[in-house]
Length: 335
Ligand code: TRP
View 1 (spheres, rainbow, N blue to C red):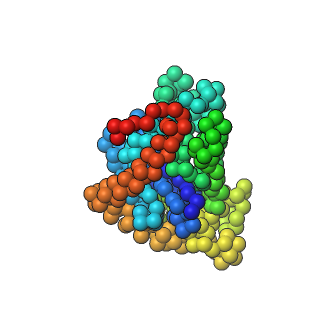
View 2: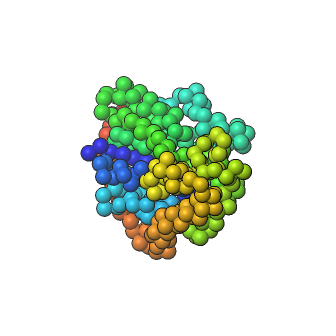
View 3: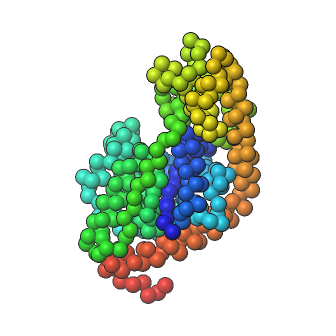
């Protein structure tokens, strides 16, 4: 079976609806047809200097959301990156194949470094894409589902794989394919519906957090910004607020936007909002409850993650042994 690998950083207490629809829903589907491996990449999160207690709880919360969404540990691997030391080991190897110029061209690094000033940024932020390449190449990954913002990082993983194979022979590593998850539903901020829904925009009322109390989410929907003319129709330019509500409605129910527009013809925004609030509550409640159940039984969660790590590390070690050998590192006979 073709192998997929993907991951998220444990940098928030809760995913928002955009993350969920754009990534987790896709991951869960891919399990049916692929050999799937999903990691919580806590080593990547260290580049943002998190508080230890916060990192610990966010790592568990992120994993809990994978499981609540339907990532099935019986079929797929679900594990925490730092539990599999081979990620850091392969990352070193890959760094010796990465050009300084090549790493300097990563636009996400440039954006992040600009915020702190180039000299304030840590080296981990610079080598972040190399660790990401290690995540992928360790599992002989065929396909990597990621958002558009990760395209350049994926390209680096492919370049490194091809470079290594060019020098040490085909099959030293597998060359992964990007599977850029087309945003079926691009979700915007409820308070500022021309901006993509994102934690960094600041206004908590604009975001639908997957782990928020569904009642609070319903409130956010009801106070979403719309426009003055009161016609319900889809027009991203002229009516971004109403269009966003229709998009969310459609994404959560599977109904098409045209059908919804027809149904709400002649009715008021308030009707749409009240109905959508119900839809969102019905959708979020089972997810919320399942995730909270995992979060409230950390021993059970840690057990699942330990099992995932054990299996992942067997695969990872076999890949690393093969690479070390091809590169000319002596076999470690003491093991
Ligand atoms: N950089 C990715 C992001 O921020 C997370 C990530 C780390 C990842 N390693 C990965 C994604 C490997 C896919 C494959 O979204």
